[in-house]
Length: 93
Image (cartoon, rainbow, N blue to C red; front, side, top):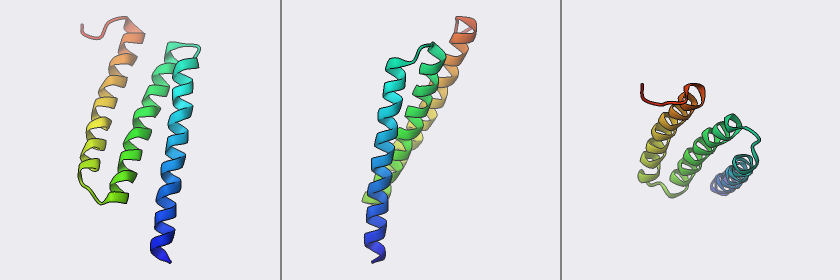
């Protein structure tokens, strides 16, 4: 019974994360300002990392956890660079 509940919970988590990623894609395409698009991209990479973590839980593979870590690090750097570009118009001073 417990394994079935865990399996359904992981499936529902994957479904909700995919739904959230779809909503952020819509916000990236439809966002009225550049700040909205940057925030949507930030949310998208967080959801992608969480989806990879859930895949790692489902399969028991360590590779997914490492990929989620790489996505998180690169996403943070990209968000910081985009924010700096929107504020000052240049990334490297």
